[in-house]
Image (cartoon, rainbow, N blue to C red):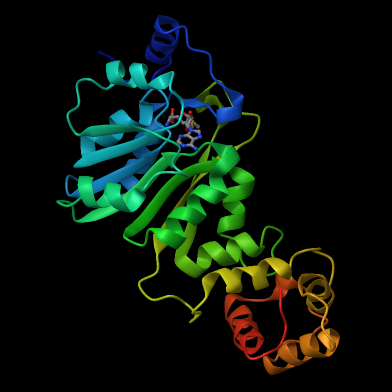
Length: 293
Ligand code: SAM
């Protein structure tokens, strides 16, 4: 039988189950085996690696993963796809489909139960574009055993993940992602490899978790609040943005100037010009201040 990631097989499956894709769930299925294999080659997946997939759809990527990885655990939210996957992937005994919203799932328990015998756990996915950021941040913040990510996403979002300071795409998401990982765009993906084709261009991003974090921050949520706060209005200075970020106190303006001075940051700079190290200095002086969100 032909692979799922082909035009003819995909059409056949969709017809057999009278399946109509839902835009609201970001359902764009891959119909090009070559592009999948290219990504899997770059990810150097082998039979000692366990893979978590988000959103298997009708199983196009899942099937290719199962051929090279030790085991694939895939989370699918759409109940209509569960019987379809039971059929399309029935030839593989190293795939487990979990019918659940990945954002609600107990990932730690899954890693413990399903991946006790693998050398590495990684994430590979053609992500539902409407939830790319929460999915990645959830994995990065709370599931530190996952070492690498190969994820297909909207081009514009992918460029933000890997952007450098002062570039057009650089923002608080770039900082959060690069705090945890080395981020790199590894492939451009044309619209024609999907059924139905999405409205936007796509890219594949590789995220490799840092062995040692680039800066020392003991409260990550607070650190991210400070970085997000610097971009509230992109054109404004960090000093002006921070006036909206903190609640009023007697000496709020002076306190903001003081933390910036202690961190050696010119208050006239914009958030987009600051590096992760500079944000870590702001975090350090904020902790010693009276300012509150
Ligand atoms: N992997 C398939 C492929 O490449 O052909 C399908 C990818 S499609 C872009 C995204 C998939 O994620 C859909 O199957 C959709 O139903 C599923 N999905 C959307 N939101 C989800 C969520 N919160 N948790 C798990 N799966 C989700």
